[in-house]
Image (cartoon, rainbow, N blue to C red; front, side, top):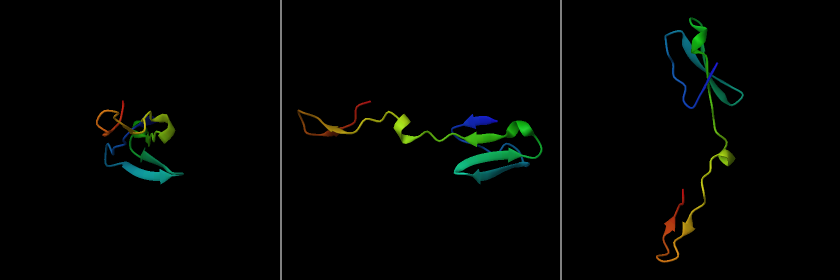
Amino acid sequence: MKVRSSVKVMCDGCSVVRRKGRVYVVCSKNPKHKQVLLEIPLHWRRISPPHRDKVNGILTRST
């Protein structure tokens, strides 16, 4: 099974299925086409909160 950030239907035997909150692609013709959508939890994403620039007072987001 391939774990991907976006799943795609590869042939006419593939079908998209939702199970337990996840998105799967299952294929009846070629088992190598099996995929699962990897959803990254929000706390794993390192997005910093916006902060105000001291000089201009503009909201910015540091990376």
